[in-house]
Amino acid sequence: MGHLHHINNERRNKHFTYKERLRIEVMHKEKLGTLEISKAIGCSQRSVQRELKRGKVTQLDSGTWIYYETYSADLSQNRYEQENQSKGPALKIGHDIKLCEYIEKQIIDNKQSPDAVIGRIKATGMVFETTLSTKTLYRYIDQGIFGQLGNQHLIYGKRKRSTGKATARPSYKNIRGRGIEERSEEINERSEIGHWEMDCVVGGKGTSRSVLLTLTERQTRMERIIKLSQKTQEAVVTALDVIERQMGRKRFAQTFKSITVDNGCEFLNYAGIERSIQSKKKTRTIVYYAHPYSSWERGTNENMNRMIRRFIPKGADISKFGKQEIKRIQEWLNTYPRKILNYRTPAEVYNLVA
Image 1 (cartoon, one colour):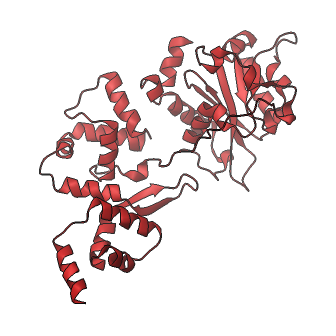
Image 2 (cartoon, one colour):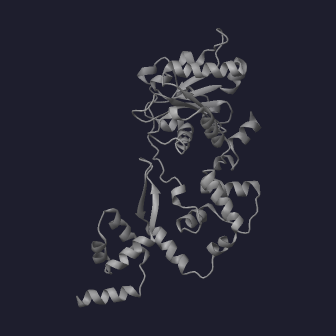
Image 3 (tube, rainbow, N blue to C red):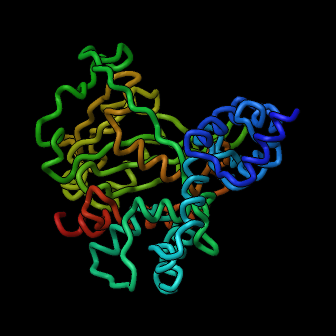
């Protein structure tokens, strides 16, 4: 008891090291209680409780889309270091009210990422008293420096991308369709505008049969979203027929030079997708099929669908979303600054090259 009392007295005047915080994070994730953690670290239970409070962070589970609270050693270490600095960048940004308000508006109201906000500031030449990097902005959000902005306004987690190489064998379901290996280099290298990727965003189980048909232009990331009453071959072909009637066959063919899809049953009618509703002798586009279980071959469209989930989460009933709301989501995607486009928006780039 005397030895433990001595350790606890020492801890009162000693802060946790970063290594100790990492140990606390691991044990906390293993569901160990504060008493067990305190014994392992060699400190009082109260010290562990205070430390867990210091490093508490709200995160979003990318699989279930449910917020949960956990402990972050990095966050706690950053907060500790910040508390021990009498001056620094955080103090400067605290006085730059315009920058704080701008960042909060773009992330909270306009749902932009920290990188998109910082990149757009630099790309457009906007001037504030304080200059921030993306990494610093993420750190400030973790540290709770902003009055309204917190981690709950960000999406956490990165999807794992398969590094395996797909077989050149086409799907048995679509033996008559063109495989993705038949695409030209212009399409693969994104050197030409007019080549799209297409997929469906589905609703939750037990909801209506409504889905979203999404088309993403590979070079500019321009997006088009169409609501379908059901996920069928007929519904997909009909939606494209409507677009062709609106645009005319020639303009449709110039806009949608090719469309890459997966082997979902709703896309297997390649003849219906390719043929023109206005000319029996001509086609309106060319369809290419990705390999089975190879979603990275349509990575641009997959990423856009993930962004759509910010507005229509998994499990939602898509029939509840009206045309105006879907149009608003489409406009948000097309006016969102992208790092890969030098922080220009898809609409800006598309209108420039189309």
